[in-house]
Image (cartoon, rainbow, N blue to C red; front, side, top):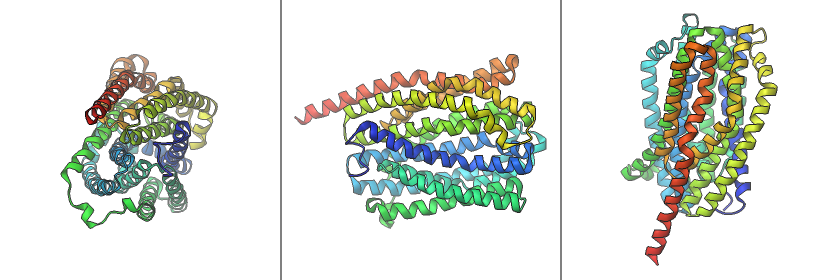
Amino acid sequence: MKNDMTRGSILKSILYFTTFIFLGNLFQQFYNIIDSLIVGNVNGEDALASISATGPICFMFIGLLIGVSSGFGIKMAHVFGAKKFDLLRKYHAMAIFLSFVLGSAITFLLLVFNNLILKFMNTPDNIYIPTYIYIMIIYVGIVPTMFYNLCSSTLRAVGNGKMPLVFLIISSVTNIILDIVFVYYFSFGVIGAAIATVISQVFSVFISFIYIFKKYSFLKVSKRDFKIDKKIIFELLKQGVPMGLQFSITAFGVMVVQVELNKYGAEYIAGFGVSSKIQGIVMQLFIGLGIAISNFIGQNYGAKKFDRIKRGISYSTVISIIFSIIAIFLIKTFGNVIVESFVPNASYIMKKSASIYFNCVMYFYPCLALLFVYRNALQGFGRSDLSMLGGVFELIARVLVIVLLTSSYGYYGVCFSDSLAWVFALIPLIPLFFVVYNKEINKNKQKIEMNL
């Protein structure tokens, strides 16, 4: 089978999958980056700060959606690896149902509490109204975002990392065109950027579902597949919710940092926000590898091929170190140059704040890369409950840094909250992976001996 990751070259399979996921995630990053780039050039620092101030909120709910849908995808990868295609279609139907329910509930809650969230984050008065309007419109796209990520996770579960990239390229081009039309020609400012983003997300969902239903007959759901199956729903939620909460816990830590950051004013918010977005691009190398290893392990766990899992995690560990060195080089060489492209006439404070952030975090990229590998490896085994510990450690580290360091080191303390959080999150994950791996091997041996 073409997309089967349970056979063939392990290294080639992981790198091939990582490449398409990296490029796909890269284009997904462009939604917010293009908004920031065009708005910053057309409307200036305050407008850019309005979008940057929503970063932690977007990270919170988008991370939740990605985590939940990725969890659904891992369960489907287990079923796909076991070659139970009729059951896979049922899982797909229940995942669609849950995505709509959860996406709608999250949208409602965020719309209701939006004002409270922005007040909690100490959003500066001079950017409060555009920030409020921008994020309210973005909330409308939550259900489409949930569905898109479900489609991507479903395709990756069956070994197809290429088509999510194709859909995102099309969607990103649409987003660029609409940004130019709404922001530059119609002068809609941050409102136009938000509308362009939502329309692009809806479009990506539409073409994704059409492709899945036409290409994969075993994923084409019918009315009878939507008959509620409590067992499958429980299994999907058991895997998806902890993964979503893991992202949310991390995002809450980022929001705590944003609360402190907002005290420094719009120039620091803009500088920190732009540098974080640029870092987000190179981070896609790590994220892509992490998603690749989770799907690789998911399929091979379903097929009970533990030797391939061991070799896969070894390859991924080496690759992650190589990727982190590449990321350090890219940020060190091009980071500050790219910052200036967002706001050509940026103030000295904005450019300096971005440079400080880069210097505080980039040398910790090896820890971040390994964090994605081992956290996603645990998720591949279906142990998202254990991988969530990484998010808890991240939250604790960020809160401690803000409480203990910012009073003495100011903005530097805010910047170091990221790097120290990565180190703390990695501490429990590596030993937990090997505990789970050995446990699953022993469990499988016992089953084989019983059958004999």
